[in-house]
Length: 441
Image 1: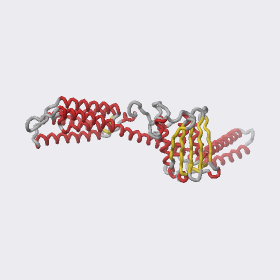
Image 2 (image 1 turned 120 degrees about the vertical axis):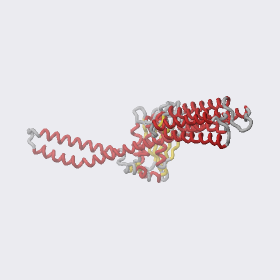
Image 3 (image 1 turned 45 degrees about the vertical axis):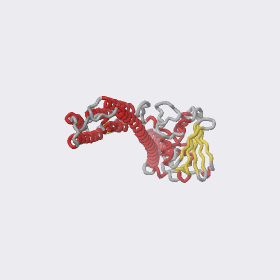
Image 4 (image 1 turned 90 degrees about the vertical axis):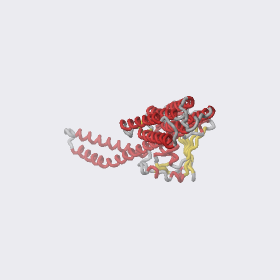
């Protein structure tokens, strides 16, 4: 199963993981409590301490409504509840409307605190899907537009202060542009962070899967080794029983069956041990580099595409490399990607000298599009397939895992067409790869 099937995605919106809830209700409740306290204190200071005349009862009623709603949410729901995309959007939309009501009572956009209408949009851009952020931004712009046209006069001690229409229009334009910019910029940066986080989680999942496969193989080899001695003893006893029992006795047939089944068990264990040895032995065994590369690519062979292995280097100087899950899964992903897009064949070339070790994977397919060639390795970037289900995680996972072993990757298109991926290690770096997987194994 390819790692691309582990995480689902939505091409028109953010990944489907947003529906699982990105923010806890407790977080939004505490943010609203801070806002309620700040609003109440500000109203009281302006009205009582500074002497500005405000519709205090109505304004405090708006604040008290938010406090009651917040208290009800806190009492009826557990604090660990994580809100879905729609619920979180509705929660923040109420905050925009509530703040708009307070600004309507205190001068509209002429009130210096009108800038606070941007706060719910900023919070929403970090936790909501694109569609919900657009909806919340449209609501914010709509509230700002209403406040620019309809509002109670700005309270003032002397003659009623009336700002010019040009100034109010400029404030409205500033709030509108700020809403759109903050929403788009914050959502883009946050979404990129979420994608990177999910991609690294998928990488760890792939590595853990490869480590489990190695562990199961080691366990099977150990079982084959431990069961060899008792099966040998059973075989000896079965032979003696078959020899001593009369040929026409009632137990002779059972003794022969026991002997044949014992031989069968020993054959199965021998085949298991030989397969494990062919796959590279235990995770701590070292094997020739060419054998490691061949073992990494063999699971992805298909009948209608040839997988050709080429070796360039002095056979007597071939480096011995640990069967590292990072290398196995990283090279395996590159070979799988090449076979997926190849027309007829994939060539895997292994080369080495005194300083460098290089593995090159080349196919005869369409190659990488030039517009994405420089961005290959980014998560959720589809290099050669516009299908929405092809998320571009394979190359990201391969590059991440191989870089952990000290490798550098280079992506290019061949002179005769097709994609070429070159993986290069300093020869000394491969000598320490075994240390990466020792704790996990």
